[in-house]
Image 1: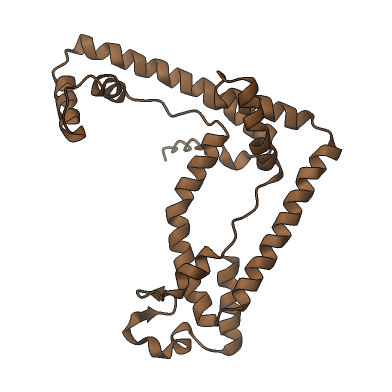
Image 2: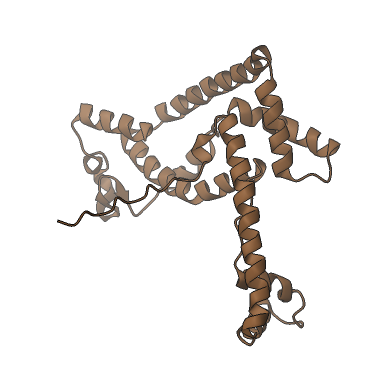
Amino acid sequence: MALLRGVWGVLTALRKSGAALCGDCGNRLRFPFSFVYLPRWFSSALNSYPKKPMTSYVRFSKEQLPIFKAQNPDAKNSELIRKIAEVWRELPDSEKKIYEDAYKADWQAYKEEINRIQEQLTPSQLVSLEKEMMQKRLKKKAIIKKRELTMLGKPKRPRSAYNIFISERFQEAKDGSSQLKLKTVNESWKNLSDSQKQVYIQLAEDDKIRYYNEIKSWEEQMVEVGRTDLLRRKVKPQAKRTES
């Protein structure tokens, strides 16, 4: 949003609205910040935007992960990340400073490149670009976060009894399209007796316990490396209403 605030400052200084700066846009512009038409220069401008630099710990972790994998080929990512976190925690400040300085240098270069690109755009283009960038961020945010969490070894969420059954039986289903297989397996689930379903219900309960233990350990590791932003949100219990 820093970019949007900067654009708003430019518009305020010029005492012009987004619509005034794009007088020839006609009905393509409904509101100053809502475009339904996006010019072709957006793609080249967005593609030239640099990626944000990795933090010092992420850089260290990404550097060490292949080494630890080679040394422990059978270990899970969560175990490797725990070992890497321990190494990072015990790393001397002088060695941590190498990664911190690299991050600061990359961040400075990142800001300079952003400023260079923005200086080449007109105020109306900046407004339009911010609109497009926000849309792309929404699409990429989930993918980027998923990749990061995978790299950091976040445990997979527990599966339901139905999902465990589907996963087990889907590969055993007769040849056919995926949709047909899913339909067949779904019918098989419906035809299971309560006692047969109880087996999968118990497996799901065991998976919940597995997830609880793994996520608790993983979150402790994230606290140690300063990634509290990845912790689950704690829901505060609602206060009981007192009868009047």
